[in-house]
Image 1 (cartoon, rainbow, N blue to C red):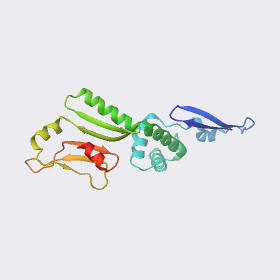
Image 2: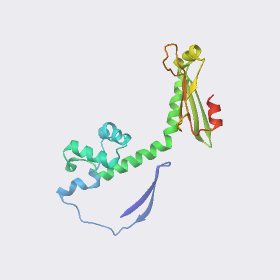
Image 3: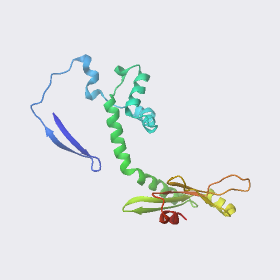
Image 4: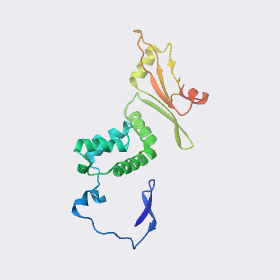
Length: 191
């Protein structure tokens, strides 16, 4: 038996338990489907089903049940419920460490490649705290309809749209912001 921990930031495994004497008899052919090497989540499964089910907050267990129903039963699945849970754990650990940086990187690329795209962000202790962005259409709308602007930050929402009303009495967007908390400092930074 062997036990190990994984440091996701450094991608290093550390062995914390090892029992050399541990052994078990070989499995019979009909038990092969439950052996660990046969438990694999294919790229197709991950991209087209599993992530969509997970992102729709169904969870790993329900995603596994749905996949089993598509395949005609649990016997026909290449992965167990624990494989689904382990994959989701690994996926969220990777994404959790980089999700804010991915958003900032994408908006910086857009700012650098589109002349009239504007993006600003603020860090607080090396963490993303506030963001604001506006595109060319938002700037054009602002030049025409900037008489009255609504900045809706009600209901404890961190997403703050800047929305005026055009001459057809329709709401349009100037830009948008994300704030980490509803303080005077955060709101004044957006303005």
